[in-house]
Amino acid sequence: MFVSTIKNSGEALLAIINDVLDYSKIEADKLVLHPDVFDLERCIHEVLTLLQPTAREKGIALIVDYDLFMPTMFIGDVGRMRQVLTNLVGNAVKFTEEGHVLVRVVGRSVEETGACDLHVTVEDTGIGIAPDKTQHIFGEFNQVEDERNRAFEGTGLGLAITRQLIGLMNGDIWVDSAPGEGASFGFRVCLDVDEDMSLAPPCLPDSVQHVLIVDDHAVNRALLQKQMEQMGARVTLCMSAHEALGTLQGVDLVLCDHHLAAPDGGTFEQQARAAGHAVPVVKLSSVQAGRGAEDAQQVVRKPISRRDLFHKIAEAVNREGQAGPRQLRVLAAEDNKTNQLILSKMLKTADLELRFASNGHEAVQAFEVFRPDLVLMDISMPHMDGKEATAVIRGLPGGAEVPIIALTAHAVGGDRENILAAGLDDYLSKPLRKAGLVDVLKLYLPDGVRSPFAEN
Ligand code: ADP
Image (tube, rainbow, N blue to C red; front, side, top):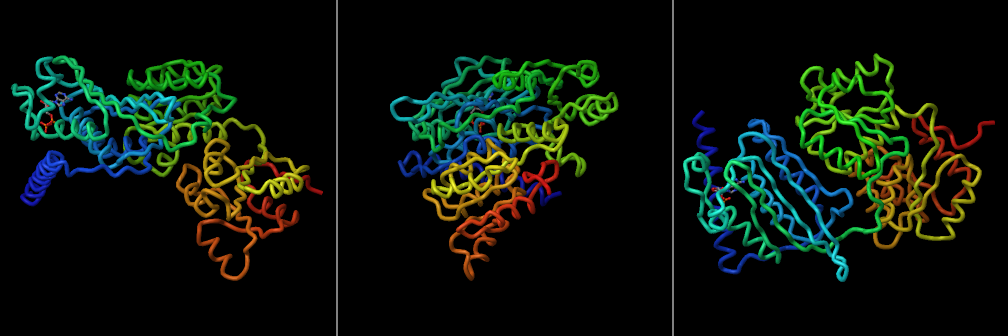
């Protein structure tokens, strides 16, 4: 009991010391940014994951609306970006008793430089701030000194540091608020993009034209509706599983909150199946860990990264929507045009879809869009080699399981161990032989996919 009090006080003191140190560093012009490539969407999700337990305890929904068509990889100081977001989202959670906190990210690419002008807003439904205090709170040690406010702990340094950090990033920060009406803190920064802008935006499987969204939370419903409509789907909204069960006719996909008031998402799916509906269902949950192994696999945790959402949709559609086994998808990462030609020729009569990537970067991008069943990976490629690309793919949704077969000219002696140690499953040595290629494609054929070779 005392130990936890001491620990909590210690942590609170440490947070204050860190704030004071940061502030004095900024004041002394000693704080420098360390820009590097980072994933902004992931950074936001990491911040929210840390704040999720507090939010859940208070019954506040944490929601992310990250523009579907925006890049996520930028050059910036991820640590300082995390600090800014932690301050703003932390405050939003602190000063909100019910409702939600919404982080919205939109951006505009700057024609001349290719950089991105980013707007991030953190909106809450909390106590709000009087107009005459909205400048004051950005000053050091400044807080709103009324009774409602001082029910909350704090030093009054967070926003002062946040404003300074945004200044170091050459950005602006502002707030819109009225007492009792929540607050919306926004900041703008211009960051260089580190992503191939031609990268295909997320897309829905062709079979999905009509989406049913079942969620009792209005802001969640509106967000999913916007995203699905942007993807060209028609949307029907329901607030309960009961209502949804009567609305399933002609629906190609259901996005369903897992924690609806009874019947919940899982029961809804069972009832839909019992009534003969084979429609793919993706269940979304704001609870951290699933309640069982089945849950962990099939329930997507909210807030959902765009990549996870579209990956789960594709998975659900593949699971439910396919009548017979489908065609094999093969991605070949190979920079040499002659070798590409040889591969195409060898597989010309095979019943499969073959796509090429010319280097590791392209392979990673193609993996996300094309979702191949098997990857043929040249090892020595420019920009990003086959081993590096494999490491990146292994970290992507679905990337841990996909068979990756090295194509290598150096498969002698220790090279084989080397390749397998780099996370590839197998290898074919060059010059390629058709028989070896056929064997590998047969060996790694996944369930639910038809053999590319006519059996005789
Ligand atoms: P702290 O939160 O440690 O007091 P900050 O500098 O982060 O310090 O915030 C300063 C003050 O601004 C807070 O004490 C509070 O009065 C006000 N404030 C900040 N964020 C919000 C918010 N989202 N809603 C209402 N008031 C806020």
